[in-house]
Image (cartoon, rainbow, N blue to C red; front, side, top):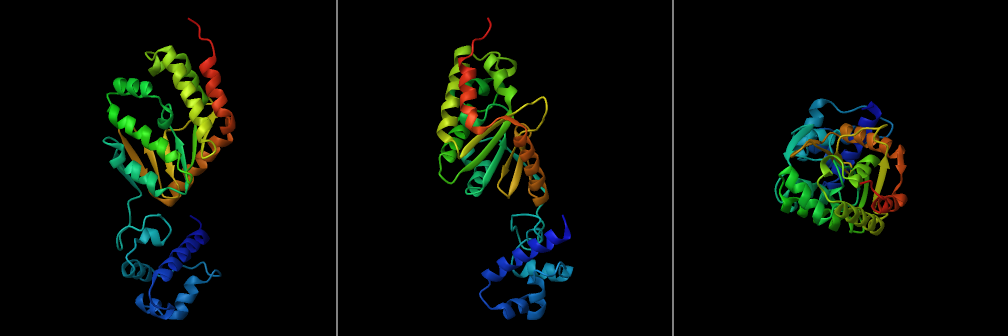
Length: 282
């Protein structure tokens, strides 16, 4: 991260702590072992210098925040003087309402969520598709259904802002009943696409689906929860990236996927409906 960005983030976090503090600036300065003039220099927009390591550690310890939050390296304040790991591994099984994935969605309310799904987006699936995918994957049908219900309810909230970006050919392969969907009946596939078209129309513009050419771009499935974290889906678990730099990098990657989209959100419902209506060769 550029030194100017780092010092700017530090000043922002320091001002946050100052606003929370019950006393005045002189008392705040004294609490971290410096005088008021030194505090003013730290808060000055003209300065790109960071305090000495001892001062940073004192601020973190005295005001019960993590050093990585204070330095702008994480959006989680964490525990006193403790640097949060840059990544974690979280299990993805169990009742969705009780998982960390649900809490991450709740935490990100009011911010933008960006999502690259592994297949048909969870909230757009019919009961029939949930049953079929649960059977072939040996995953809990109840857990998958719970996740779908949660995501639909979440996206119907007026403060939701979600962008989904996926390969166009995923839907085309599904429509033709190829790959993992070869055992899913044609009429069920058509009903799934009609259901998808209806939901895309209903939820737009708070839920926006972009479709890109999967031959030109590639992405692993992941979700960006506002500015807080990225959860990369790796099967039955998630690789969770907490560092600000990682969130920014994958946000840029997502933006590049959107720039290459061939089907934009206002066209997505119509595209799904056309797939539902097209004739298939016997």
